[in-house]
Length: 130
Image (cartoon, rainbow, N blue to C red; front, side, top):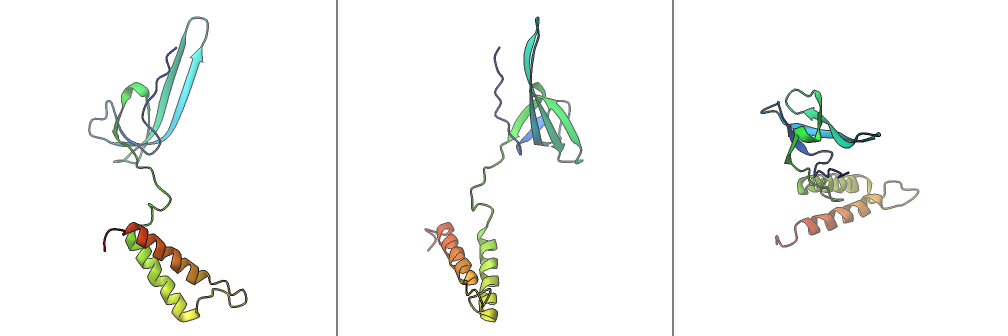
């Protein structure tokens, strides 16, 4: 038995035969292996979300064509430079209003430490942009 290996994963954008111009996002993948005395097969079924009408559709391996791979997220990829600058502004305002400590009893310097983390991330994201 040859196992079908597809390059489709959750989050990928696909087309389904019979739905000409519609695009679908893969939300789950189910693999079925069947074997009895006379027959043996494996099939992959995709649960997809139609991006136009937001309805769920199911399709098997033979009816699905990959259009666009979902990008793998790195640890910090979801934080844009704009987001980091916004948070830096917020943290700076908190430090001006309350000082470096979130809790005066603990004196944990949480605001100051987060500000340093943001500065490091900004330096990393903008290296070579001096």
